[in-house]
Image 1: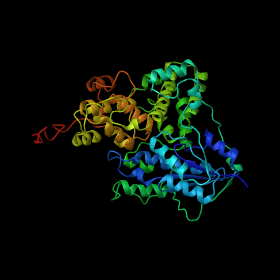
Image 2: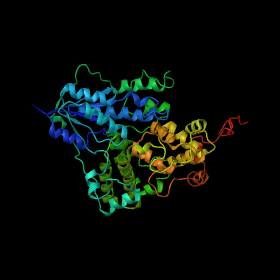
Image 3: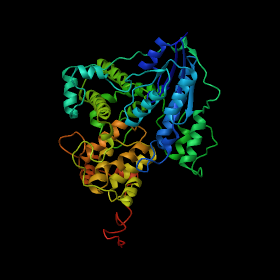
Image 4: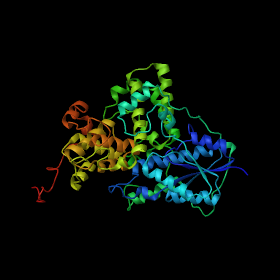
Length: 473
């Protein structure tokens, strides 16, 4: 009897450089490929924010369309199913008598729990997993004594271990011979949905009156013109677009000046813009590393090319930190013995989200985020510091808002970076407090960014009531 597999796509929406797909191709004669969209992702739950916002939803839909096309080239279909993943996947495996379920190792705690629930519900299906989201395998880090994190090290210590022992990221097979595998249809009782229908259905959740969107217009992967009217970032999602963008970036030689531009608040090539593709799993981190090494072989190494690798290491550090500290990543006091001296001020938080604070630079950054789903790394640090230090608000509300709004949301990097700002992370120096006036003088001396994103403050006071709940005139 032939070995039958089910591939469950999660944060690995690509065909190339996918080690788990390669394993499936080696082990199976028959296979099906599914992606599960959980409707709870677009409900306001965590700190009254969605897990998945409109900007990242667009990139997800584009990634699914592209993945469908790339699988079709090898004779397979991507089935998109709505529902709680733990129920959908377990039901499929048991009903189809699947021999092996293939799913990438998950970084987030809730995603890990979903896989564990699936495993508990399976009858006779075994689970095959791979760390396809990280540069290194746990075995590499354990051998280098960088894991396990009995006591989480600082990033600097983690980086020194990696660089001192010259640990090389894994090289994944470029392609997987999926065309040699027979495609298996899902049971007729299973309802699937097209990416276009999913997009239009989700829009009704975001905009019940359909205001601002023509939901009758079919979704078109060919270009971002369809969404231009709602101000969404024009970065196109999917593995194909990721490869085009990465090739263009390195061909532009922007990598040689990256360290000088990385703190800019705006500019087409000031950032690599690799992060949205990494977060969706459209590209493997190790693939970007290999392309960086090829670039250095052609054009030479310098501080800027090293800094791209340096930031890949930052991302790597947060992934393994998240895996090791589990629920502490989301706790108010994080890894600290006591929490920061902050609270929750609904009015202040609402104004911070809307970009209506007394700080023009913060407002401009928030307007940029709300309009495009993207913000520079420097901007993220400034607005986070403002929320915690100037407005005195619980850092988790800011992290949850970023979770909904960012097109490149990554569980580990997002919540880990917010812990750093709030002073409840691993950093021995405590939190970060940015002087907003100084940051404005350095990074927007001519107010070009503030003017572009209309950051000027309009209201007279941040609070409408005082500590005794009396209205402020």
